[in-house]
Amino acid sequence: MNGREQLIAIKAILWKEVLRFSRLWVQTILPPMITTALYFVIFGRLIGSQISDVNGFHYMDYIVPGLILMAVITNSYGNVVASFYSAKFQRHIEEMLVSPLPNYLIMAGFVGGGLARGIAVGGAVTVVSLFFTTIPLHNLWIAISVLLLTSILFSLGGLINAIYATSFDDITVIPTFVLTPLTYLGGVFYTVTMLPPFWQSVSMANPILYMVNAFRYGLLGVSDVNLGVAFMAMVGFNVVAFWYALNLLNRGYGVRT
Image (tube, one colour):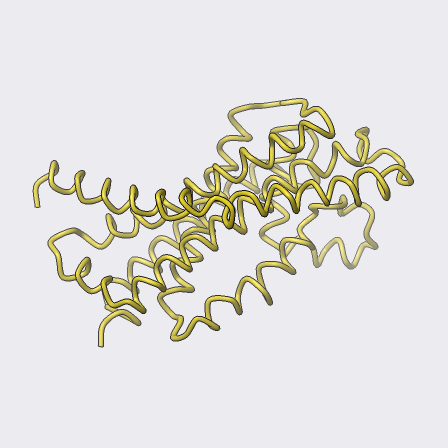
């Protein structure tokens, strides 16, 4: 395939992915908005009013970055894992794999769909947050960089999960038993300085902690972790996840019988 044909092919995959979640916006975009509003009402207004300032910010302001990134993580991952596994289940992924389109471009199409949904939901959640508080944007480029790196990483994670999955139950195991606990324990609702020394050390092994804090720095200018370490971790995880997913596709693991 020449460059023009490859561009047409990847646009087709990406457009299919975008249409897939945008047509079902009541199921894909609206629920995170409602959930975030409930978080603000319960944690921000009711519980937050009883909590003193955190790192110089009202509690409601402090949790905004974490709630936005949590929505991005969940939806980027969920979009790709469901879409790619559906393609396997309906057996039309094989048509892509036997086509002249390189596997890395097939990956790019699915990951691009996850990125698009992650950004769409992140934007929607941000709009919801503005009804409850203001967002003091400290560094736009850091915030955007973290948002993109995080969404791409978890889109790749969803792709890997879908490749390994052999049933619809398999695509819910990782989000339920791994992703959700790591997200809630990743500093979304608290600063790690609130924890005893031992649990502070344990928290440092949670990769989501670095993403949440780097994004919080972009919006609020405060972080519990070193920003350079956070970016190195995110870039490193993206490189490893991309290589691993591409290796699985090149081997035909889980997609060829």
